[in-house]
Image (cartoon, rainbow, N blue to C red; front, side, top):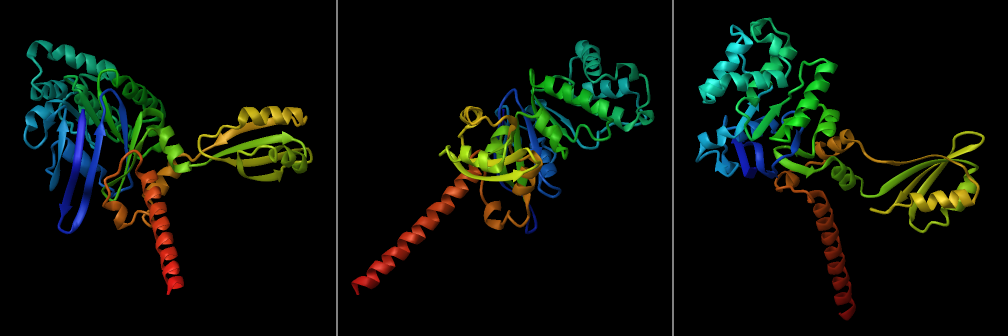
Length: 354
């Protein structure tokens, strides 16, 4: 649906976007995350045809944005962070104007306008001047414009800015429903919103792709080893004797939290689930289990770790990331360390021969 290949946008010696590549599949909602200055808005402006790249290409539904701009743009509905609405028009007038620009056939215009106003719940505002609307309703008008003509790709830049909590929930539900007919790219600074709505999350830092995966996949990728937290009714010594019987455990820390209860944080290897076995062992030892849950990094933790300016050095900025980018990076480091070790050993052997 959307293919971004080796995208570069350079201003003088500064790279706003640096060799960015990713693919957006049909019928999914993609969250687009990054700190301020990471290149999110620049990338969105290039994808939507508002800005020309220095290098690289963008294809929308097979159409190259630079070579076939009209065909590519017909596939896109775009809501910028600041909705492009005209304050002296009524809501209905503005949407009719937008429908004309999108070349929606005159016989279908009113039907299309009414449909999107119902979707965004602004039908009762159609005769109101846009200048008299609240910021939240202006945002809804902008979203209605993006939905006009039912484009295959919907790109939303901070769509819930200025909305009250009830409106945010309504817009979230609307965005979720869009993937039945559209592919959606959503840019937001509200990480909980992205986690709740999106099927896939793209994180960029310093103009390069830092990660691309499902919310669950990002958590697994960044956590590596699982941590299981349990609370039992018993002493630390009693609990430790049970844990000693599980060879899958790589480490644990115990804490007495009351006169009768002990908490343990247990580390296991990746894709190792000991919950059922541990449950039965605790039952056999007559240690009542009060609580058990898997602890994982939040999206906020993952975001901060991936976009930490001290960790994202120039060597990382030059890589074209992918789903397994971080894991591959770790493997490369391990391979390099192994090679250095072999070379050091060879040097020792040569010295011995001499």
